[in-house]
Length: 217
Image (cartoon, rainbow, N blue to C red):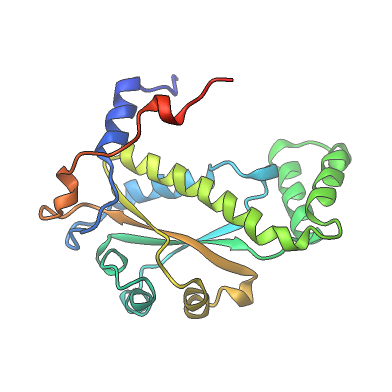
């Protein structure tokens, strides 16, 4: 089965999407569509394949109401069909690396010994002296890759999104109990369907021309 789609379909979807400011709170994403969106998060690429993040789907209206004041009071937090908080690991351990390698063995059916070189590479990069300070930033970058994957998938499915960086991470972490789990909130994404009175839906998309942004060396 071909996994490709027409170029025009992709570009039309990317031109259609925008940072939705006002969601229609009465319109909900179907369970089937949401399952696909969740799978796009699971399938997102990450450094070494380690997936150093967690995605919290905040469904409880009371919790969303708690988060809103710490999100510049943006209405998307409470009005969107689904609200995702993306959290990155604050530290990596040998146990986390080995857990991933065990998963590789399980899925691919290969000898554990064949991964010793890869294990050494990850240990050297992520567990060597001085590496600890870099982990939160590294994990945050991986979460942003997943964010892009989620938003593109949503656009292709006709689901509106708004990435939200305007929030207080420390407050989110406290409300969601992330610190105790070894994670810190990085970025959020509201998903649902645009309201008919969102004026930004019809605004022209503003981008610099490709010649300004893309250079060939």
